[in-house]
Image (cartoon, rainbow, N blue to C red; front, side):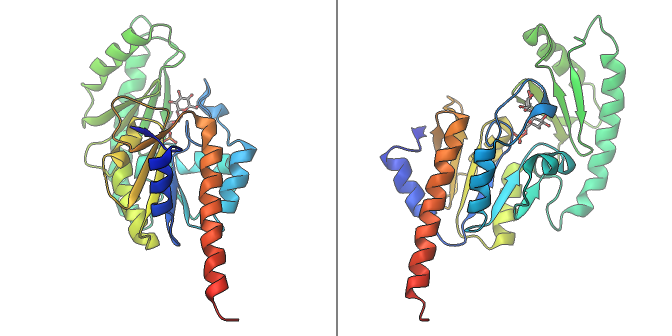
Length: 265
Ligand SMILES: O=P(O)(O)OC[C@H]1O[C@H](O[C@H]2O[C@H](CO)[C@@H](O)[C@H](O)[C@H]2O)[C@H](O)[C@@H](O)[C@@H]1O
């Protein structure tokens, strides 16, 4: 895994930045710093300001694990695409798929709420986030993370229908097994936007579904280096997203200027 702002990474950035490229970002841990309470996450003003400029030069998409209603109130601007629930919510044309996801999710929620009432077995710091089409089970506030993870895994194995369980940053994401994931969503967004290239930036395990695509026309960037990632490049830390947004804006603006210079008045 290589650093994006080294020679190879900047060369790859030069190759991928083309008119009409699609710029796709995860939210928590990528555009917004990780905070102890999910409800307190916010988009820093210096990031919002750059995203607004970027959106005047290229289609911008937010592809998040949060629900659409939740992410919209945190963005404070309207990107070209907002896709929630790890790709399950908000994709134009995929609306018909969501009914069965909602049924599975409601069944998991009832079973989990019942089980989590047993405070001898489950830490009271565990928090369920119901996003209608997928669930997040947060345990950042639990006292013993290792024990909580193990007990939750045992509990998830009893659920019907069996969910796809992905472990993230002090969170388990429960998703329908046959559902699309962020990788499929990114490819569909490229198709709908007519984009010949894309960049995707993410920080966690659900983003690996995009990183694993390994397409030459998709530049993948992970926040913070990680030994097991399939991403091509990394940014050392979340605040470095500001520099990446500046690099994208600079290249796209230069290209746009070059095109208008060539166009006869
Ligand atoms: O796909 P993302 O945009 O990265 O969303 C992933 C999950 O993010 C949220 O949880 C994470 O961020 C919280 C705020 O920083 C943090 O408190 C929590 O521990 C993290 O797991 C969100 O609550 C989930 O719904 C998303 O799936």
